[in-house]
Amino acid sequence: ATERTLSIIKPDATNRNLTGKINAKFEEAGLRIVAQKRIQLTKAQAGQFYAVHAERPFFDELTDFMASAPVVVQVLEGEGAIAKNREVMGATNPADAAPGTIRAEFAESVGENSVHGSDAPDTAAEEIAFFFSGLELVG
Ligand code: CMP
Image (cartoon, rainbow, N blue to C red; front, side):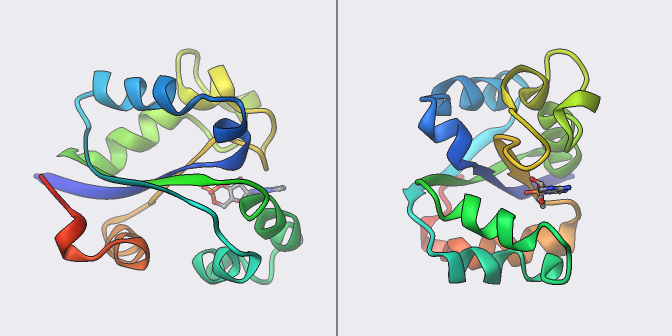
């Protein structure tokens, strides 16, 4: 089925001017960017977005990093978009990411791993609503 998923191009990637190269990977995989904006998160907003990780030892590092520079938040649409996006991103840890994936090519570490993507339909819906109103989604 046609799905939508929430994608974030993280500070390590925006800092290195990789937005276009990462978007090319999504588009080449058949994912359509139906909404996109560049924003600066506060640490509090990053904490709200990653609330599910609040008890993890890396939470403070993660939220500092996500607030350290602009991010590009986007909605990707396509057939099986959630799984397809995860395939294009590669494993969370770039050391484990398959060749040709975004994280294999661009990520610097498990923390500074260039992109985020929703992991399931329910989280995709929540994460899209966190950043976008219905009016901003232009299929
Ligand atoms: P993401 O898919 O955005 O979801 C949570 C993020 O936490 C994950 O990508 C990683 O960037 C980050 N993360 C996971 N494990 C670690 C870790 N051990 N140290 C730092 N950051 C981590």
